[in-house]
Length: 263
Picture 1 (tube, rainbow, N blue to C red):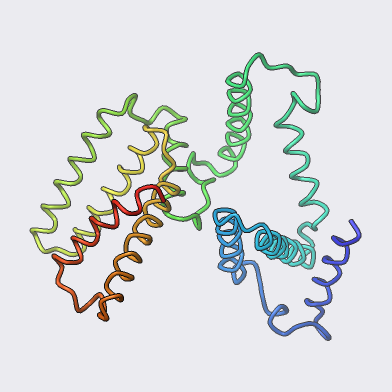
Picture 2 (picture 1 turned 60 degrees about the vertical axis):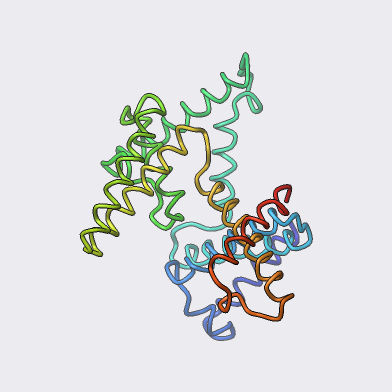
């Protein structure tokens, strides 16, 4: 707690109107959004790279963002860091009655169902305040994450296909509509249909128990490794990628798929 108190004090000094840092002083909740998101992504990146030293540093940077927002709120007499900590502690106790009270679940499935029921109850209270089922989904989430959360929320209220097959058919239908839009030459319509295709692809991922954000990250990493393999092979011949014929690059791509299939 001593180190946490020191961090809170450092934050107060940075925001001091007379002796603080000019950059920190001029920040507000909205201006900090990109920094908060960036720090969260950097935490995820450190975890995926299994770099524990970097993870320690990135968690500190993310904690600083929490402290920064709490300081802004305290200055506006909205809430403070203690109330933030109390709020999450209360939520964790409320959502884990099998740990903090005498509730006993017969299985992990029963425990998960109880967890989801409690979250649904909390969301219902928020929905009553916001007057809409989907209004509680954060608008600044990555597009795939936001799309999945919105579809999950709608599904929890009965708006969903009951099985995978019609979702798969819908993907094929949307793909045909993308082709029709492309043939029309209407760029705005093409964008709309591409968006519809991506949305239903997320729905297909949901029905197949796949997280679309993580799936795309993995495929992007795979693409990166294969492209870097091509780049290295081309460099060994004293050339640059953009000087090669597409047929050669395609052949190297297939070579990379075999060479890197276990990485």
